[in-house]
Length: 485
Image 1: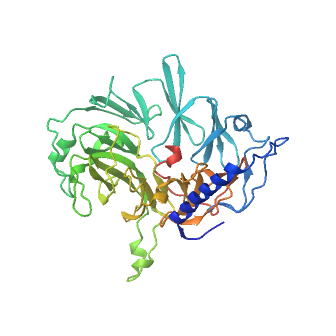
Image 2 (image 1 turned 180 degrees about the vertical axis):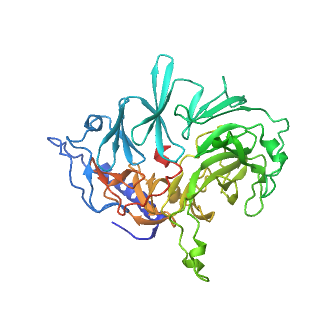
Image 3 (image 1 turned 60 degrees about the vertical axis):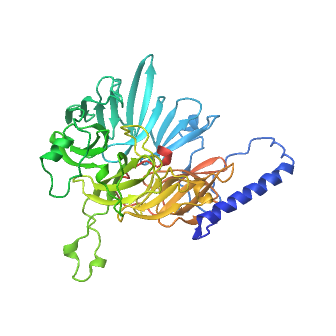
């Protein structure tokens, strides 16, 4: 039943009370007799479709005609992840996996390797990494959303980073990070750049460069380079381990594009952090610039975005410092311009040094330009940010709200799992307001693809729904949702 604009805590509090009542009632109820024969799986979806989806499903998975039955019939069940516009179905009892097109069920890839992680390539498209072991030899491969293997290596010094291959120095470690790095494209004959990461003579940092102030001192400060931690298009980001983040142009033999140090990033109130370290949140597109020349005089508000222009790619960085509230800063990917900064509720410790994994648990809703950022603060677990404006829209602060973990976004809605009861439940709320738009769903949305197809579980069956409104071609989202982390 759709409840229309109820606040989130009202819904979840009701779930908590209902759970308590049911637990008391079930304690005295006699057990139901076991059925004499297994009940057949349903083939018709009952009730209203979840928000953002078409009224009726396209197909269902548990069917003798489906090619994935040998995995779907696993007695220990399966786990399913969205990869681009496809579903990756994985057995829970052994290493067996099947990648199928969400819309029509076509098999794109089969494998018996261990799935190590989900990540993205240089365009922002989803890929996943698998590994196989033969004795002491481990071979890792990266597979894209179409089922193509885009990289394979058995070299323990090599790793896959957002569509690039990074070869680290021998015996590299976070405590001894210096040495020669080689960054190259996976395809043979592709672009390659090698450099020496050296320790700086003076660890002290000066102010970050300002517009028009790209002098020799900036070049010298960034000359010792750093460890690759992210890439998008031709831009590679390096972290020197001492609070300096810099962008290099892979197409121009690693030429410096821009640099920024955390002690130069100011919150809107002028606050700066002491000894801050950067952690990538992700790469995100901003809307294309308006066609100002086409807008009539005095009608700026009616000017529409230029749909033919490419979106402006940006990188969002979290700056963390011990015992201080962290800061977010959004930068233009090509020139490093700081578009905005925003303070976070808590400290959000950095974790591993030189971590190439973006902040886990973020949820990006491209339909509204809203980014949900998880928090380590005990009082606030999630904040929602208007990416274009750099403003906090809302946060999860109450006990009931903190029991909800956002998983993915769909057409302006966010689906989240609630820990309010033992069986778990799912709530759906608006990305920009956190107003609940649906409660007591008749099915559980298990995964959502980039093009809006969703896998909905109801009564032991899995139904595939198309999006309610087919999405327009847009830039791929930057960061996998929680389920892909």
